[in-house]
Each structure stands twice: as C-alpha cells, then as structure tokens.
Amino acid sequence: MKDQYDTIALASTDDGILTVTLNRPQVANALNTQMGHDIYDVFGSLAIDQGKTRCVVLTGAGEKAFCGGADLKERNGITDEQWLVQHALFERMFRSILDCPIPVIAAINGAAFAGGLEMTMCCDFSYAVRTARFALTEVTLGIMPGGCGTQTLPRTVGERRAKEIILTGEPFTAEQAAEWGVINRLCEPGEVLALAHKTAQRICSNAPLSVRQAKLSIHQGLQMDLKSGLFFEIEAYNRLIFTEDRREGILAFNEKRKPVYKGR
Image 1 (tube, rainbow, N blue to C red):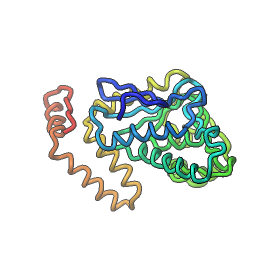
Image 2: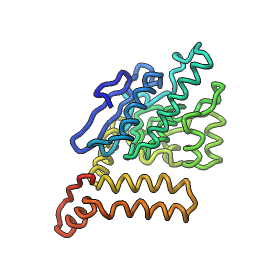
Image 3: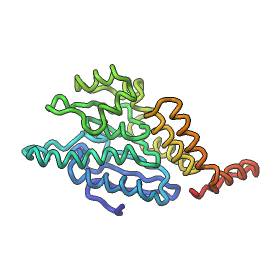
Image 4: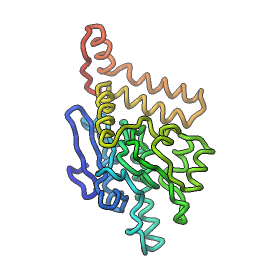
C-alpha cells in the first residue's frame, strides 16, 4: 500500500482506523480506471498484511456524492476490448472490498449510484446521510450491474425488491435504503463520517483476531446450509482458543481492567 494515490485519499488513526476517501468530487467521485487501480491496491494490500489497521471506513469527498458510478466520459468511445479489460479490473476491485479480512464500514455522504451502490453493498455495513439517494442504473445504459450488485443486493433486500430496483433503474431514498436494510443508520448531513468513526473505534477496541474470525464465519456461513455453517463457526472459534488475546480478555475481565489486545 502506498502513502498517496491519485484518486483516493488515505488517513490513519493511532487506534487502527483507516479512512479511504474517494477523491474525485468534481465528477461525483466517479470510478475511472485509475481509481480502480488505486482501490484495488489498498484492499489487495490489506488482504495480505493489515499491519496496525483494524477497521476501514470508506467514504467520498464532498457533500453531494459518495460515488456516481463508472466514469462514462472516460468510457465514451473506448473499444469493446478496452471495456472488457477495464471491467476486469473493476471486478477485482469490488471483490477486494468484499473479501477484506477486517471490517469495512461505508460512510455514504451523498448519492451512491450504479457502481457506487455496488461498492456500498461490498462493505460490511453502511451509514448514510438522510439526503443520500441510491440506484442501480445500469439497465438504462444498455448494460447490467457487474460489480456484485445482482448478488449482494438480493441477499440484503430480497429477490423481489432487488428485481424492482435493478430492472427499473429507478432511484430510491435514504429512508427506503434504511427500511430495506441497505443502510444501517441515517444521520444528518455532515455527521456520517463521525458516526462511522465512532463505530469503528468500538470495533478497534475489541480483540482483532476475534473480529476477523467472526466476520469470516458470518460471511462464509451464509453461503452454506445451516449445519455446514455451524461446523464452520466452531472451526473459526477454535482458532481463537490458543491466542494471547483470548487469555488477555479473560484475565482483564477478572482483574476489572480494560484489555490490551495485540492481535496474536
């Protein structure tokens, strides 16, 4: 992971929060090829080595848009082959967010359309400002969602609701997003990043190996039948028995003090 990127901004805190900001506000933080490379580099690096990072907050620059989707001006006139190559990059970028081993919270500061909504759905959960709007508009452009949207959205809102959203391409409100489970909490404009950071701080105060294993068990277990999921849960649980953090957590509880977790 680099210190600086062309299309995103990074900021880290001492307690382990990495804030990743989509930083093209002049074009609604639209996803261009360079942003695909930049985001993929960050989350690909986190898959290999988390370092001191225990939680990621993903947001957008400005107050109007989280991400307006793919940069259609960049796509205008490109060949079919160039489109396929660019989209292969985007596919890997979306999956790198979805597969991040540590929690990823989306702080939706404005509109999340097309790839912007798909990016939201690849995060573990999301908070949004009440003025945000959401849509998967791909079918209005002669394509379809290809950033995990046809898979993540139905798993969240249900098949029938997802079909309505995707097949019409019509926008929906933040209140509807919260009602349907796309968004966990709503807040007033200007407050979403602080809300996401507050939750991230709570996550970072917990045992990092426990958080990772719990996230993995939830995500993988939902792809299985119940009995297989229960077996997977115990395998994930048992890996924590022999850790220093497990012993520290029990000791700190009995000594009535705050635990000091080291991630080992």
